[in-house]
Length: 304
Ligand SMILES: NC(=O)c1ccc[n+]([C@@H]2O[C@H](COP(=O)([O-])OP(=O)(O)OC[C@H]3O[C@@H](n4cnc5c(N)ncnc54)[C@H](OP(=O)(O)O)[C@@H]3O)[C@@H](O)[C@H]2O)c1
Image (cartoon, rainbow, N blue to C red; front, side, top):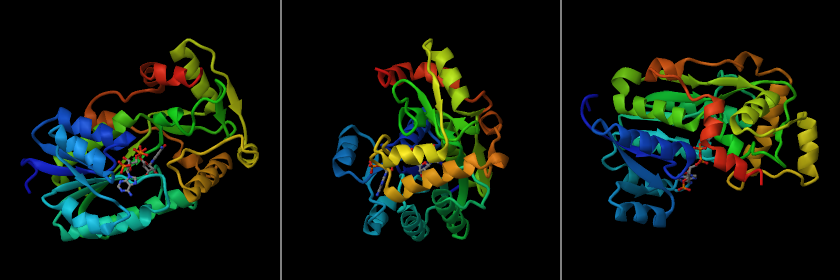
């Protein structure tokens, strides 16, 4: 389909952080690309349809659901959850997308250099190579750490910012910025974006610096508890820390390996910020301070 026509875009993970923001961003630019919301939950899909929204049921663990969901779809946003199933899910979905005549697929990966050794980064790199080896036109989006993790896996514990990587910095990016980039790439299509990699990293901050930014934004002292990966391992072993319910054990174990590699300096070359939001969207990205102010209630709710 020419890039000027309207495309139907299957948005995987439309109930999740990134996917729901991609739907919103696509709807905010009507005409070029129409989102088709996807969920594995039948009741969610029924509710969307009742509300007059275009929606389909798809279960990434059940390739039998793929042909129906991909019928009439031009472009796909592929996001998988926090599980080790992503390789099987993405491989089978890409095969089905080829068979269904999908013209463009945008994949949400991680901020890596293709040489990752920690498992979940390596899984994403395998998926990217599989997509690149397919007949589909593709673009890969590589976000650094989501600011939204501060409401989940990196939530404040007893009012403190717990940081298990010493003084090491990582990049932070807001989900709305990721979504705005994804939506633009999906809407403009393969003519402009095929074969492109978009790296997203807005603020480079360690735990102490995040705590400082939160203190300023919230007007309330947020101390940092700076630890090592070994300290975190001991806390997990003692049952003092838990992983989010939607993260499987293999992915959770991999996040600890990633933390160790960051702590050991093996990610130092990836501790950078990028100008992708500015270049693609022509505006400043959302920095952590304003993000925290906008999420004040959620952050403070977690302090009480
Ligand atoms: N958090 C970070 O710092 C970070 C950084 C870089 C990359 N990432 C990557 O971002 C991705 C997660 O993005 P997110 O935070 O936006 O996800 P999320 O909020 O956890 O949402 C996951 C979505 O996946 C859907 N899903 C899960 N299993 C499914 C299945 N079997 N079939 C169909 N849909 C399924 C869920 O929808 P239903 O439940 O409605 O089906 C949900 O909408 C992961 O690949 C992660 O590696 C995360």
